Image 1 (cartoon, rainbow over the protein chains, first blue to last red):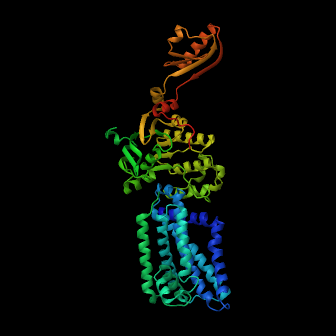
Image 2 (cartoon, rainbow over the protein chains, first blue to last red):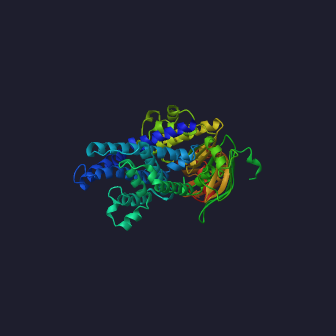
Image 3 (cartoon, helix red, strand yellow):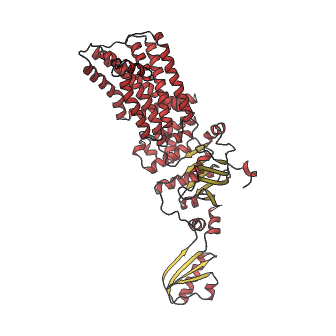
Length: 247
Length: 313
């Protein structure tokens, strides 16, 4: 009960402090992805039903998963440390996992809201339909979120300052969004390049998520990639746990 | 400092060393704090006070030496977990989330400690009762410090660690904090505070440690430090035609600078002052200036360290 209350209060405060009262956050997480969806849908397509929106809806959701992990968790943790917030909570009886869990759950709920908005806009404006099994879609989304939160935490663990965390997150997120099948199909690159890009966890996640969600592919065909994502998650968590500093 | 007092002391620090690279921030510090007392670590910024305090609360790892707080070893995870609910901490330059409101922060910390939220009561105790819904970013540094104090106190800890608690506070905040600290000591709590304000150390501490370059250079009650190191009380008089007679010379040592005579006395400077004035009047010397100086902790500090605390940031 005590831990549950701790978790719930912390998660609620995360939402109020870092989202509801932060106009910039609301813009970047809710308005910007929709703007991208609409802009790219028209830019890349010859008409509303050309299929580019169908590609973009899961792609943009996938890109948001990446930035959730790298910025929402990684840079956030570095900021918390730089502003001496971590030291302060470290001397309280709150178990560290509660702190991480509440941050991750808050970002997951935010992602869920982002996904719902993007899917709705996709359905209303561009007739994109979710074709897969909802539980399988959710499972892939959760695994992908776990992977990038876990990798993002490494940034939070190793970056000495908010500025360096920010730089690392930018260097990772922006190219990855373009090289991982999120905004533009990597099939258009030479075969050797696209094969190499499929070794990236971001590509593995976004491709699986797209195939399962809008193309209705059964999850059973993606065992290797799911295993790879699970491995990235465990590796990221292990590195973070060994290197994370509260002070 | 022997090992025998380990049991009855709330805090025992023995031969504590903390090195950062080749620099020893703390270089062999030992002290004990009896329960129910206020212990002050006084020194300039960078003297090693904060590092010492951090080693007591698990934020810093001693390079060598031992620390026990309530018999627990903060370097052992299990002990630290048992210790955390029993200590309250106000850190130097704690920053709280900018968009957080006073009430929310108190609620969150109540949840951390598994106690009912006492936001209203705690805000009133630190004079923030009209600012419960104010966000951190809209509060002054002193108000934030007072909130930090409330967060340290809310769960009624046995031992309180205050790191430069009044730095940046106005006179109002300082009065509130001092009153709280004294009230807590009277309620049997043990308090460790670091400060570079002489006045604060003198007013609050039952015992003061003067810390210089990672070492303790003096430890005693403020009154003892002043008596031992503060030097003589002085009476200074400038009066036309004044010269100390034999009776006045028996009060202490006289020195003359121009028309000004200064008496350094071991005795009660008030009585010496009265005698000087009486004598001057008897000599029909017109007094143009008169001054009495009681030795203070600051005099003791300067005598011990060869440095002043002065204005530093």
